[in-house]
Image (cartoon, rainbow, N blue to C red; front, top):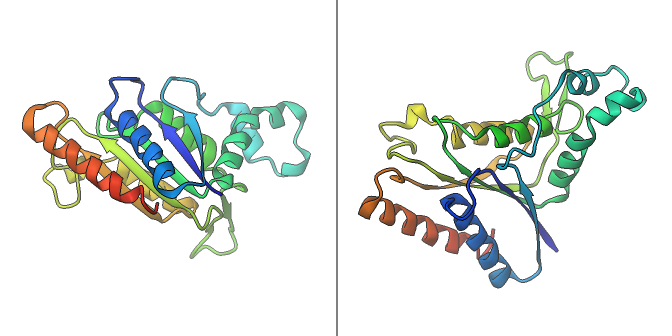
Length: 212
C-alpha cells in the first residue's frame, strides 16, 4: 500500500487555499488509486519547536548510540518525524509563501528532519563530495500559494522565491529529487487573475492524483 505523508504548513484553517487544495488532492488520489494510506502532519499551527542547544549537542554527539538520556530525549520528536518521512512513499507539502520564504512551522520541520546521521551522512575524508543523502526513492509534491505573480521560473519575481525553490533544494540535499511544484498566484489581487490561477492548480492536481 502506498503511503503519503502530507504536511500542512499554513497557520490558517478553512481560509487556507493551500490546505484546501491539498485536502482535495488527497481525496482524489484515494478515489483514483485506491490503496493509499494518508498520514497527515500539522506543522503550521505552532506545534513544532525550534531546535535547542540540547538538540544540537545530541545530533552531533560523537557516540550516537550512547547518548546520555537527556540528550536522547531532546531528539525524540526529531526521530519521530524522520521515521515518519522514511515510512512514506510520497511527500506532499501545502504551504503559503510568507515574505518570500516558508512559514516558521515548516522551517521547524525541516530543521528537525534534515539531520546528520539520519537523513544525510557527512564524510569529511571526501572533501569533493562530503554529503551523502539517505532519503532515497521518494517523490514530493509542493502546493504553494503566493500573493503576487511572477515567482515561477523565468518570472520577474523569480529571484525573490525562497519558498518552493528552497524546499526543492533542501529536499534534494537529503535525496528527494523528484519534486513537482503546483503554485497559485495573485492571491492578494483576487479577481479573475487569482481565479484562473486557482483553477489551473486544480486541473494540475487532478491530473497528478491519477498516478502520484
